[in-house]
Length: 263
Image (cartoon, rainbow, N blue to C red; front, side, top):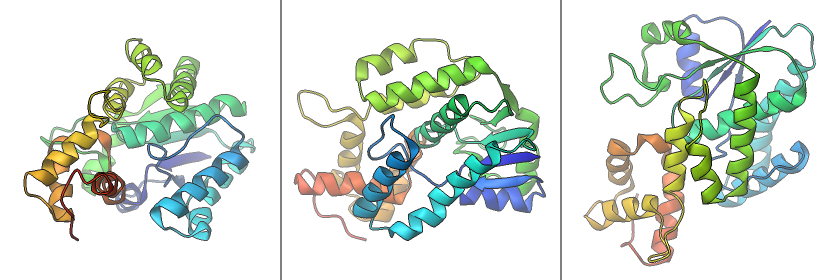
């Protein structure tokens, strides 16, 4: 049995339209935002569900059906002998890379010897400003398995280290990790460099990411759609969607560092 773990619903649409085969799990968590910790999975997803329902306004039942049920199905499948290969379809951005190292850490600790493969292109010849596999046509999507990379034990060790360091929230540890070799996980370096830009500096108390968003708003873009589009032009590395950018906008508004933003 071949299992495909897709990085979201937009990828599933292309997966289906391109005629790809195999069982599918859609990963919808956004572990690049909110609390994370190295704790047991029941407590971890309870913590995540509480944060997302309180912060994003989502319903806990919605989280359970869209996120937790998919993870539970993954656990069930890894406990079956029929699982031969898992293919992880993820983007190069911070949002996807954090989700990826969480999943690779899961496979590292679960003890299943399943073959793991990764599809994670950082560029595409038909897209000069490539934003990820979600923007490919079904025909372009069909060619992605040609870029499939087989992952080994060293990759799992690196991913587990990356997850531990990400959970620590310590900038020095992240900087040291960035300086190391990441084997087949070549997109981790750039993603973790972007993560460092989310740490506040001592002078202003703001991160480079917050300064960027504040600069867009203070330059005259006070409608959310305009802010999103301006941000995405040169900041695709974060992989942030509307709801994630909104978190930073709301924080800046509360601190009265930007004028009120409209829908």
